[in-house]
Image (cartoon, rainbow over all chains, first blue to last red; front, top):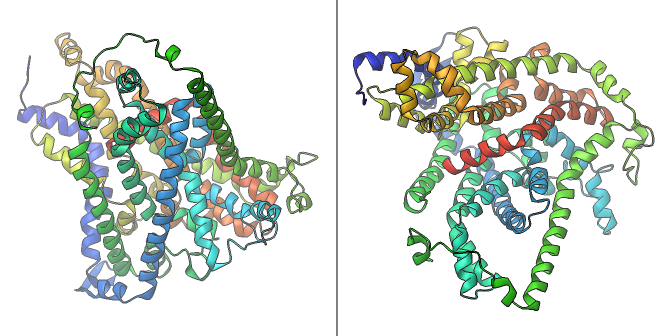
Length: 296
Length: 300
């Protein structure tokens, strides 16, 4: 009993998909095109919804805006700070969790905990931990004879504070992905290697490391993409400011400021397009890689 | 490495007694490694938990204890009245109800739209199926930050800015959920579907009485991920609400940072109110969350 698509079955399927399609078309697909259009609006009247002229002015404006470059620079620093640190730590933890049996899932649950909690709430807790005078962090540093650091108000340390918190928060997610990757490695490789007399270290470097390559790549690209979109953390950690002296002004924060605080819709849209293009590059790399190397 | 990957059918091995011949030193180093792993994992787990412990501990302190140096690890008397105080200083009761309402409606709505759509994609034949699915998947690559500005304009055209609808309607469907459910629905054998059809059961009936119960765990996973996302959503609700009484918890909490001033015990009590419900859900339904995340991660 194999059916083929008919007009009737297509009509029926459309009815089933209609509620989803209505929402997705209105709030996911249409706005993609609208955003592109908006980035070329140079004279837009919000109240009458009329566009008087189009042009490249928005892009010219952002590329000449020192704030925009600062946002790009800060975002790259953030990504470079968070992603490698998180990969190394989460890979190490995943390997250890994979090694032990007893309490393994208990530890995993703890590492994953921040993932389910509100970024805003957690960032506020961290801003309390980072408090210059009464913060726990400075108390710990004090135990090692380090002078108090004003993490939240000193431009030199704000980014560091943001990176530490973000690594802490994202660790569990990466650990889960590494555990899946480790699970997908066939046990027989290890058994075979044991028969051949390969030691623990040998098995690790000759089986685990190469076979975990695709997972590591996937986790890195996803980390890069997600880190590029950082906003909630910044907003909550630095009390609705982009860090002291804009030291934590990120690309999404820049978009937010242009749109929400300055009502510069066209400029905000143009900055959004730039963000989209940056992320697109990484997405395409990931897709090309998946096609080539990931076979499960 | 190449040979290993190319091996399609790894040789099946009988349980081996290799360990016996491994010698004493290797057993010792095995124990040492495990001990080291437990030690490091404990340090890691404690660092993960300290912010949560510190949040709860501060929330139960007196104002003086909260700013004491050296820090008071656990308050001598638990001041639960801090929570009552937080509810007085800001309308956290209202924020809480707002969050519950927004989360419930958008979750139920999304389940309805995505279950129907996933069914069409998994079991129905129709023209343009592959193209449509590819287009939908492609939308997942677009950062949601790009959609904020046009969506704001769309909603303001409909006069929906500063309403609950603004926080609910755009989230009544999700391509990610359709994708997850479609995969699961596909694993329900077609024979079951055809048999039900022969018995005169309608598609709609089959979907809700057989397909949905059979895909329970995937649906639960999608539901919980949606609840967490909706509960914790911040930027969009911040942008589309001006009225304090419409705020969901994260937006209310953020505003509270200025309202609470230097009363860290109140701020931490409020943070605990926001975080606690999701931690409870996590403790009970963890396995579904982790299942959902691992599937989502692999598919990118």
